[in-house]
Image (tube, rainbow, N blue to C red; front, side):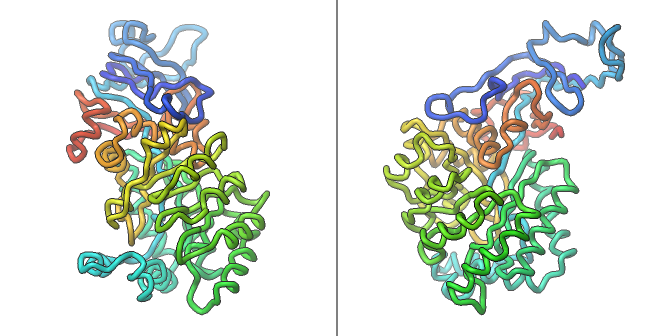
Length: 414
Protein backbone atom coordinates (compact mmCIF):
# COMPACT_ATOMS: atom_id res chain seq x y z
CA UNK A 1 0.00 0.00 0.00
CA UNK A 2 1.09 3.55 -0.72
CA UNK A 3 -0.80 6.40 0.92
CA UNK A 4 -0.36 9.48 -1.25
CA UNK A 5 -1.34 13.15 -1.02
CA UNK A 6 -0.96 13.27 2.76
CA UNK A 7 -1.44 16.92 3.71
CA UNK A 8 0.62 16.53 6.89
CA UNK A 9 2.54 13.47 8.09
CA UNK A 10 3.20 13.84 11.84
CA UNK A 11 4.85 11.80 14.58
CA UNK A 12 8.14 11.10 12.82
CA UNK A 13 10.85 9.97 15.25
CA UNK A 14 14.23 8.23 14.83
CA UNK A 15 13.86 4.47 14.67
CA UNK A 16 15.60 3.92 18.02
CA UNK A 17 13.49 6.47 19.96
CA UNK A 18 11.37 4.52 22.44
CA UNK A 19 10.20 7.50 24.51
CA UNK A 20 10.66 11.27 24.65
CA UNK A 21 11.52 13.23 27.78
CA UNK A 22 12.00 16.84 28.79
CA UNK A 23 12.28 19.26 25.88
CA UNK A 24 12.15 16.37 23.40
CA UNK A 25 8.52 15.77 24.39
CA UNK A 26 7.68 19.03 22.63
CA UNK A 27 9.17 17.97 19.29
CA UNK A 28 7.95 15.78 16.46
CA UNK A 29 9.06 15.36 12.88
CA UNK A 30 6.63 16.33 10.11
CA UNK A 31 6.44 16.25 6.31
CA UNK A 32 3.94 18.32 4.35
CA UNK A 33 2.42 16.96 1.12
CA UNK A 34 3.75 13.48 1.83
CA UNK A 35 3.45 9.81 0.90
CA UNK A 36 3.99 6.68 3.00
CA UNK A 37 4.53 3.09 1.87
CA UNK A 38 3.44 -0.03 3.78
CA UNK A 39 4.85 -3.51 3.21
CA UNK A 40 3.85 -6.59 5.19
CA UNK A 41 1.95 -4.43 7.64
CA UNK A 42 4.91 -2.19 8.46
CA UNK A 43 6.16 1.24 7.45
CA UNK A 44 8.60 0.75 4.57
CA UNK A 45 9.27 4.31 3.39
CA UNK A 46 7.90 7.85 3.41
CA UNK A 47 8.76 11.30 2.15
CA UNK A 48 7.49 14.33 0.20
CA UNK A 49 5.21 13.64 -2.79
CA UNK A 50 7.95 14.73 -5.21
CA UNK A 51 9.80 11.53 -4.27
CA UNK A 52 6.83 9.15 -4.32
CA UNK A 53 7.92 5.97 -6.18
CA UNK A 54 4.47 5.35 -7.65
CA UNK A 55 2.76 8.69 -8.10
CA UNK A 56 -0.44 8.77 -10.12
CA UNK A 57 1.54 9.99 -13.10
CA UNK A 58 3.94 7.06 -12.90
CA UNK A 59 1.55 4.20 -12.22
CA UNK A 60 -2.20 3.82 -11.75
CA UNK A 61 -3.80 2.08 -8.76
CA UNK A 62 -3.11 -1.65 -8.87
CA UNK A 63 0.11 -1.28 -10.86
CA UNK A 64 3.03 -3.60 -10.22
CA UNK A 65 6.55 -2.33 -9.38
CA UNK A 66 9.41 -2.85 -11.79
CA UNK A 67 11.97 -5.69 -12.00
CA UNK A 68 13.71 -6.54 -8.76
CA UNK A 69 10.93 -5.05 -6.66
CA UNK A 70 8.05 -6.81 -4.91
CA UNK A 71 5.59 -8.25 -7.42
CA UNK A 72 2.56 -7.65 -5.21
CA UNK A 73 -0.08 -5.25 -6.55
CA UNK A 74 0.22 -1.74 -5.11
CA UNK A 75 -2.89 -0.40 -3.43
CA UNK A 76 -2.80 3.38 -3.85
CA UNK A 77 -4.78 5.22 -1.17
CA UNK A 78 -5.46 8.92 -1.72
CA UNK A 79 -5.33 10.79 1.60
CA UNK A 80 -6.93 13.82 -0.10
CA UNK A 81 -4.81 16.19 1.97
CA UNK A 82 -5.67 14.63 5.33
CA UNK A 83 -3.22 14.41 8.22
CA UNK A 84 -1.68 10.97 8.82
CA UNK A 85 -0.61 10.32 12.40
CA UNK A 86 0.23 7.27 14.52
CA UNK A 87 -2.87 5.89 16.19
CA UNK A 88 -3.50 6.48 19.87
CA UNK A 89 -1.92 4.16 22.43
CA UNK A 90 -3.90 3.79 25.67
CA UNK A 91 -1.72 2.32 28.39
CA UNK A 92 -4.23 2.27 31.27
CA UNK A 93 -7.79 0.92 30.95
CA UNK A 94 -10.26 -1.18 32.92
CA UNK A 95 -12.46 -1.74 29.89
CA UNK A 96 -13.41 -5.33 30.83
CA UNK A 97 -16.26 -4.91 33.28
CA UNK A 98 -19.89 -5.93 33.69
CA UNK A 99 -23.01 -3.80 33.74
CA UNK A 100 -23.00 -0.12 34.64
CA UNK A 101 -22.47 2.08 37.66
CA UNK A 102 -24.68 4.92 36.50
CA UNK A 103 -26.46 4.94 39.90
CA UNK A 104 -23.16 6.06 41.43
CA UNK A 105 -23.13 8.93 38.95
CA UNK A 106 -26.17 10.27 40.80
CA UNK A 107 -24.32 9.82 44.11
CA UNK A 108 -21.47 11.92 42.73
CA UNK A 109 -23.90 14.60 41.57
CA UNK A 110 -25.38 14.60 45.09
CA UNK A 111 -21.96 15.30 46.57
CA UNK A 112 -20.56 11.95 47.66
CA UNK A 113 -16.83 11.49 47.15
CA UNK A 114 -15.14 8.48 45.56
CA UNK A 115 -14.03 7.36 49.03
CA UNK A 116 -17.55 7.76 50.49
CA UNK A 117 -19.12 5.74 47.69
CA UNK A 118 -16.53 2.99 48.22
CA UNK A 119 -17.17 2.99 51.99
CA UNK A 120 -20.88 2.36 51.31
CA UNK A 121 -20.06 -0.77 49.30
CA UNK A 122 -20.01 0.91 45.92
CA UNK A 123 -17.11 1.59 43.65
CA UNK A 124 -14.81 -1.32 42.83
CA UNK A 125 -16.76 -3.72 45.06
CA UNK A 126 -19.97 -2.92 43.17
CA UNK A 127 -18.24 -3.76 39.88
CA UNK A 128 -16.92 -6.95 41.45
CA UNK A 129 -20.41 -8.06 42.46
CA UNK A 130 -21.73 -7.40 38.95
CA UNK A 131 -18.82 -9.21 37.31
CA UNK A 132 -19.18 -12.34 39.43
CA UNK A 133 -22.87 -12.53 38.45
CA UNK A 134 -22.01 -12.25 34.74
CA UNK A 135 -21.04 -15.21 32.59
CA UNK A 136 -17.68 -15.20 30.86
CA UNK A 137 -19.36 -15.04 27.45
CA UNK A 138 -21.54 -12.08 28.45
CA UNK A 139 -18.53 -10.33 29.94
CA UNK A 140 -16.67 -10.72 26.65
CA UNK A 141 -19.63 -9.51 24.59
CA UNK A 142 -20.05 -6.39 26.75
CA UNK A 143 -16.33 -5.62 26.76
CA UNK A 144 -15.60 -6.12 23.06
CA UNK A 145 -18.18 -3.41 22.27
CA UNK A 146 -16.14 -0.92 24.29
CA UNK A 147 -12.88 -2.01 22.68
CA UNK A 148 -14.32 -1.57 19.20
CA UNK A 149 -15.62 1.85 20.22
CA UNK A 150 -12.08 2.81 21.25
CA UNK A 151 -10.69 1.53 17.94
CA UNK A 152 -13.27 3.54 16.00
CA UNK A 153 -11.94 6.63 17.81
CA UNK A 154 -8.37 5.87 16.74
CA UNK A 155 -6.89 3.68 19.49
CA UNK A 156 -4.57 1.09 17.95
CA UNK A 157 -2.95 -0.32 21.10
CA UNK A 158 -4.32 -0.66 24.63
CA UNK A 159 -3.65 -2.23 27.99
CA UNK A 160 -6.55 -3.85 29.87
CA UNK A 161 -6.49 -4.66 33.58
CA UNK A 162 -8.27 -7.25 35.66
CA UNK A 163 -9.21 -6.11 39.16
CA UNK A 164 -13.00 -6.36 39.25
CA UNK A 165 -12.91 -10.06 40.05
CA UNK A 166 -11.41 -9.87 43.54
CA UNK A 167 -11.44 -13.66 43.88
CA UNK A 168 -9.25 -16.27 42.19
CA UNK A 169 -11.98 -17.55 39.89
CA UNK A 170 -13.25 -14.13 38.82
CA UNK A 171 -9.79 -12.62 38.31
CA UNK A 172 -8.81 -15.50 36.04
CA UNK A 173 -12.12 -15.12 34.20
CA UNK A 174 -11.23 -11.51 33.48
CA UNK A 175 -7.77 -12.44 32.25
CA UNK A 176 -9.24 -15.04 29.90
CA UNK A 177 -11.61 -12.43 28.46
CA UNK A 178 -8.73 -9.98 27.97
CA UNK A 179 -6.73 -12.68 26.19
CA UNK A 180 -9.70 -13.47 23.95
CA UNK A 181 -10.12 -9.78 23.05
CA UNK A 182 -6.45 -9.64 22.11
CA UNK A 183 -6.98 -12.53 19.68
CA UNK A 184 -10.13 -10.97 18.22
CA UNK A 185 -9.19 -7.40 17.31
CA UNK A 186 -6.41 -5.94 15.12
CA UNK A 187 -5.40 -3.52 17.89
CA UNK A 188 -2.48 -4.58 20.09
CA UNK A 189 -3.73 -5.64 23.52
CA UNK A 190 -1.64 -5.96 26.69
CA UNK A 191 -2.99 -7.62 29.82
CA UNK A 192 -2.45 -6.64 33.46
CA UNK A 193 -3.17 -8.69 36.58
CA UNK A 194 -4.60 -6.18 39.05
CA UNK A 195 -5.75 -8.52 41.78
CA UNK A 196 -4.73 -5.86 44.30
CA UNK A 197 -7.41 -3.37 43.22
CA UNK A 198 -9.42 -3.59 46.45
CA UNK A 199 -9.91 -6.17 49.21
CA UNK A 200 -12.51 -8.65 48.03
CA UNK A 201 -15.61 -9.36 50.09
CA UNK A 202 -15.16 -12.08 52.72
CA UNK A 203 -11.41 -11.58 53.14
CA UNK A 204 -9.39 -9.86 55.82
CA UNK A 205 -6.78 -7.49 54.42
CA UNK A 206 -3.95 -9.93 55.11
CA UNK A 207 -5.86 -12.90 53.68
CA UNK A 208 -6.53 -10.97 50.51
CA UNK A 209 -2.93 -9.87 49.99
CA UNK A 210 -1.85 -13.49 50.36
CA UNK A 211 -4.50 -14.60 47.85
CA UNK A 212 -3.19 -12.04 45.33
CA UNK A 213 0.33 -13.41 45.80
CA UNK A 214 -0.77 -17.05 45.56
CA UNK A 215 -2.56 -16.38 42.25
CA UNK A 216 0.50 -14.85 40.54
CA UNK A 217 1.75 -18.08 38.87
CA UNK A 218 -1.64 -18.69 37.21
CA UNK A 219 -2.09 -15.04 36.28
CA UNK A 220 1.38 -14.97 34.73
CA UNK A 221 0.27 -17.57 32.17
CA UNK A 222 -2.10 -14.97 30.66
CA UNK A 223 -0.95 -11.50 31.73
CA UNK A 224 1.99 -9.28 30.79
CA UNK A 225 2.01 -7.04 33.87
CA UNK A 226 1.14 -6.95 37.56
CA UNK A 227 -0.39 -3.86 39.16
CA UNK A 228 -1.25 -2.72 42.70
CA UNK A 229 -3.56 0.11 43.81
CA UNK A 230 -1.05 1.58 46.25
CA UNK A 231 -3.08 4.41 47.75
CA UNK A 232 -4.87 5.66 50.83
CA UNK A 233 -7.53 3.16 51.92
CA UNK A 234 -6.45 0.41 49.53
CA UNK A 235 -2.96 -1.18 49.62
CA UNK A 236 0.08 0.03 51.52
CA UNK A 237 3.67 0.38 50.39
CA UNK A 238 4.42 -2.75 52.42
CA UNK A 239 1.65 -4.70 50.66
CA UNK A 240 2.89 -3.46 47.31
CA UNK A 241 6.46 -4.44 48.06
CA UNK A 242 5.36 -7.97 48.98
CA UNK A 243 3.25 -8.43 45.86
CA UNK A 244 5.87 -7.05 43.46
CA UNK A 245 8.60 -9.11 45.11
CA UNK A 246 6.50 -12.25 44.61
CA UNK A 247 5.90 -11.34 40.95
CA UNK A 248 9.56 -10.69 40.18
CA UNK A 249 10.66 -12.60 37.12
CA UNK A 250 7.06 -13.51 36.26
CA UNK A 251 5.23 -10.23 35.56
CA UNK A 252 6.48 -6.70 34.85
CA UNK A 253 5.24 -4.18 37.46
CA UNK A 254 2.91 -1.24 36.85
CA UNK A 255 1.51 0.80 39.74
CA UNK A 256 -1.62 2.80 40.61
CA UNK A 257 -0.20 5.56 42.79
CA UNK A 258 -1.03 8.96 44.27
CA UNK A 259 -4.62 9.26 43.07
CA UNK A 260 -6.09 9.92 46.50
CA UNK A 261 -2.99 10.77 48.53
CA UNK A 262 0.80 10.96 48.26
CA UNK A 263 1.13 7.25 48.93
CA UNK A 264 4.75 6.26 48.37
CA UNK A 265 3.60 4.16 45.43
CA UNK A 266 5.86 5.98 42.97
CA UNK A 267 8.95 5.24 45.03
CA UNK A 268 8.13 1.55 45.54
CA UNK A 269 7.33 1.25 41.83
CA UNK A 270 10.67 2.72 40.82
CA UNK A 271 12.41 0.44 43.33
CA UNK A 272 10.93 -2.59 41.56
CA UNK A 273 11.59 -1.29 38.04
CA UNK A 274 7.94 -0.59 37.23
CA UNK A 275 7.32 0.14 33.57
CA UNK A 276 4.92 2.90 34.59
CA UNK A 277 3.44 4.59 37.65
CA UNK A 278 -0.07 5.79 36.92
CA UNK A 279 -2.53 8.44 38.16
CA UNK A 280 -0.25 10.94 39.96
CA UNK A 281 -3.03 13.43 40.65
CA UNK A 282 -1.21 14.11 43.93
CA UNK A 283 2.51 14.60 43.60
CA UNK A 284 5.46 16.34 45.18
CA UNK A 285 8.99 17.05 44.04
CA UNK A 286 10.03 13.82 45.79
CA UNK A 287 8.17 11.78 43.17
CA UNK A 288 9.94 13.60 40.35
CA UNK A 289 13.28 13.06 42.06
CA UNK A 290 12.54 9.34 42.40
CA UNK A 291 11.64 9.02 38.72
CA UNK A 292 14.59 10.96 37.33
CA UNK A 293 17.07 8.59 35.68
CA UNK A 294 14.74 5.58 35.94
CA UNK A 295 13.12 3.54 33.18
CA UNK A 296 9.66 4.17 34.67
CA UNK A 297 7.12 6.25 32.71
CA UNK A 298 4.96 8.68 34.73
CA UNK A 299 1.44 8.24 33.38
CA UNK A 300 -1.37 10.67 34.14
CA UNK A 301 -5.09 10.06 33.71
CA UNK A 302 -6.92 13.35 33.14
CA UNK A 303 -10.22 11.54 32.55
CA UNK A 304 -10.31 10.65 36.25
CA UNK A 305 -9.52 14.21 37.25
CA UNK A 306 -12.34 15.43 34.99
CA UNK A 307 -14.94 12.94 36.20
CA UNK A 308 -14.09 12.93 39.92
CA UNK A 309 -13.13 16.57 40.28
CA UNK A 310 -9.59 15.66 41.35
CA UNK A 311 -6.50 17.81 40.74
CA UNK A 312 -4.87 17.36 37.35
CA UNK A 313 -1.37 15.89 37.36
CA UNK A 314 1.58 18.27 37.20
CA UNK A 315 2.55 17.14 33.72
CA UNK A 316 4.25 20.40 32.79
CA UNK A 317 6.41 20.30 35.93
CA UNK A 318 7.45 16.74 35.11
CA UNK A 319 8.53 17.76 31.62
CA UNK A 320 10.40 20.80 32.95
CA UNK A 321 12.18 18.39 35.32
CA UNK A 322 13.47 16.48 32.30
CA UNK A 323 10.97 13.63 32.56
CA UNK A 324 8.61 12.21 29.98
CA UNK A 325 4.86 11.98 30.54
CA UNK A 326 2.29 9.59 29.13
CA UNK A 327 -1.46 10.19 29.17
CA UNK A 328 -4.06 7.41 29.18
CA UNK A 329 -7.84 7.18 29.44
CA UNK A 330 -8.37 5.06 32.60
CA UNK A 331 -11.57 3.90 30.87
CA UNK A 332 -13.62 2.32 33.68
CA UNK A 333 -17.22 2.37 34.93
CA UNK A 334 -16.70 4.39 38.09
CA UNK A 335 -14.20 7.19 37.62
CA UNK A 336 -13.54 7.63 33.88
CA UNK A 337 -16.28 6.14 31.68
CA UNK A 338 -14.67 7.10 28.37
CA UNK A 339 -11.93 5.70 26.15
CA UNK A 340 -11.73 8.73 23.85
CA UNK A 341 -7.99 9.42 23.63
CA UNK A 342 -8.53 12.54 21.56
CA UNK A 343 -10.40 14.00 24.57
CA UNK A 344 -7.51 12.88 26.80
CA UNK A 345 -5.12 14.76 24.51
CA UNK A 346 -7.36 17.84 24.63
CA UNK A 347 -7.45 17.75 28.44
CA UNK A 348 -3.66 17.53 28.41
CA UNK A 349 -3.64 20.86 26.57
CA UNK A 350 -6.60 22.60 28.23
CA UNK A 351 -6.19 21.52 31.86
CA UNK A 352 -2.52 20.50 32.10
CA UNK A 353 -1.13 23.25 29.83
CA UNK A 354 0.76 20.90 27.56
CA UNK A 355 1.45 22.05 24.04
CA UNK A 356 -0.38 20.06 21.35
CA UNK A 357 2.87 18.31 20.43
CA UNK A 358 3.64 17.45 24.08
CA UNK A 359 0.13 16.05 24.51
CA UNK A 360 0.34 14.19 21.19
CA UNK A 361 3.59 12.47 22.21
CA UNK A 362 1.97 11.63 25.56
CA UNK A 363 -0.92 9.74 23.91
CA UNK A 364 1.18 8.00 21.25
CA UNK A 365 4.88 7.22 21.74
CA UNK A 366 5.13 7.63 25.52
CA UNK A 367 1.92 5.74 26.16
CA UNK A 368 3.17 2.96 23.86
CA UNK A 369 6.36 2.89 25.96
CA UNK A 370 4.26 2.60 29.13
CA UNK A 371 2.99 -0.79 27.96
CA UNK A 372 6.19 -2.01 26.33
CA UNK A 373 5.04 -1.39 22.75
CA UNK A 374 7.03 1.62 21.57
CA UNK A 375 9.32 -0.49 19.37
CA UNK A 376 6.22 -1.26 17.29
CA UNK A 377 3.75 1.59 17.85
CA UNK A 378 3.48 5.26 18.71
CA UNK A 379 5.52 7.04 16.02
CA UNK A 380 6.31 7.13 12.32
CA UNK A 381 9.56 5.22 11.76
CA UNK A 382 10.76 2.62 9.26
CA UNK A 383 9.84 -0.87 10.43
CA UNK A 384 7.07 0.10 12.83
CA UNK A 385 3.56 -1.29 12.58
CA UNK A 386 1.26 0.47 10.15
CA UNK A 387 -1.36 1.63 12.65
CA UNK A 388 -2.58 5.12 11.82
CA UNK A 389 -5.32 7.69 11.96
CA UNK A 390 -6.00 9.38 8.64
CA UNK A 391 -7.95 12.59 9.18
CA UNK A 392 -10.16 14.56 6.87
CA UNK A 393 -8.36 17.38 5.00
CA UNK A 394 -7.30 20.48 6.90
CA UNK A 395 -6.39 19.04 10.30
CA UNK A 396 -3.23 19.53 12.37
CA UNK A 397 -2.30 18.70 15.96
CA UNK A 398 -3.39 22.06 17.34
CA UNK A 399 -6.80 21.84 15.69
CA UNK A 400 -7.13 18.24 16.91
CA UNK A 401 -7.01 19.37 20.55
CA UNK A 402 -8.79 22.68 20.00
CA UNK A 403 -11.87 21.38 18.15
CA UNK A 404 -11.99 18.31 20.35
CA UNK A 405 -15.58 17.34 19.53
CA UNK A 406 -15.60 17.94 15.77
CA UNK A 407 -15.60 14.71 13.70
CA UNK A 408 -12.22 14.38 12.03
CA UNK A 409 -11.39 10.75 11.21
CA UNK A 410 -11.40 9.74 7.57
CA UNK A 411 -10.06 6.24 8.27
CA UNK A 412 -8.34 4.22 10.99
CA UNK A 413 -5.71 2.02 9.36
CA UNK A 414 -4.43 -1.21 10.89
